[in-house]
Image 1 (tube, rainbow, N blue to C red):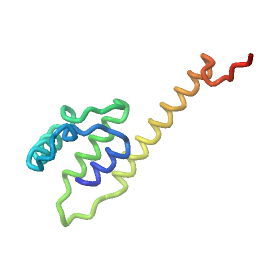
Image 2: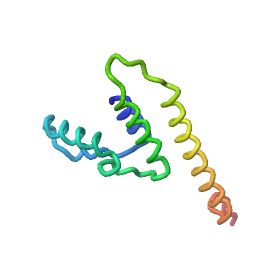
Image 3: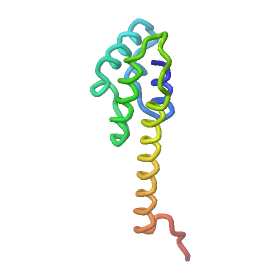
Image 4: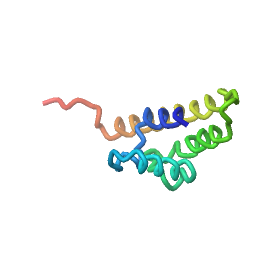
Length: 107
């Protein structure tokens, strides 16, 4: 499960338990609720990658401690996330070029 939270952190997702004070028991309860209902609990800043993140979480939840993860499943979802973010950034750059945001102003 920690792996999933690291991915979320790297993608700059916002965790609901950050609003909790330093009460470890409160934080634990919030995390448990989020794992059970990720669609509701996590405030996905990037709706494009929500399904891939949930797919990773769902897969991780199927694993037992002694299981060897199939990293290809996780890698596939991470690649989809990377492609979607790359395409989203390319589309933003194209839009900015179309409206002249990146052009220097000459006086």
